Image (spheres, rainbow, N blue to C red):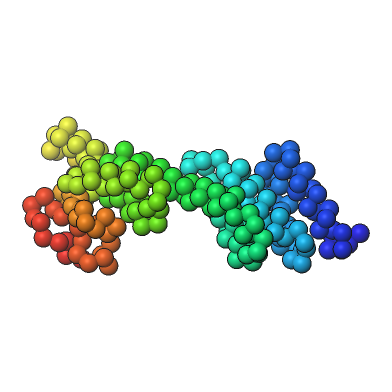
Length: 227
């Protein structure tokens, strides 16, 4: 009857498999993780890793939702290959497929964020996500799309024009609200900044002061910004 007794891992595995068959992916993942964590010497360890990773991928709902199932799948797959190399080699193809899916979904999440920022005209932020795709997910379909976003951002403002400040023109000069709506010096500098990307170095971050000279330039000058 002990929760860590000789047969307890069999019971836990049976429960996990039952939830898997019922397509209760999150519940199945939790039970497989219980077995992995509690019954470290169980002969079910490899299968728990394999089916746990599969459950996590099936539990993942997409780029608009939590990345936790994707992270769990990635962790279990890499842990499984490292701890059980012989058994993993016997299931090489399905494991490779799951690893490829994890990589695809991770790139998809970055691209989703990049397009969101790009559509909001936050071009510098969009490029940050695109750079991560080009650096870590070059072999996915999103690499080419990320490069297109970077190329089209060349010469565009780093940040969008704050539309609220156009309201200053609608108020008479004596209005006390007008001074509060006028852009600050920092906002003015940001509004004048444009994206300048070298196509030979797509991985550089235009806002990263540690990556050599900044590639954000003002409309009035092509000199690197002084930090």
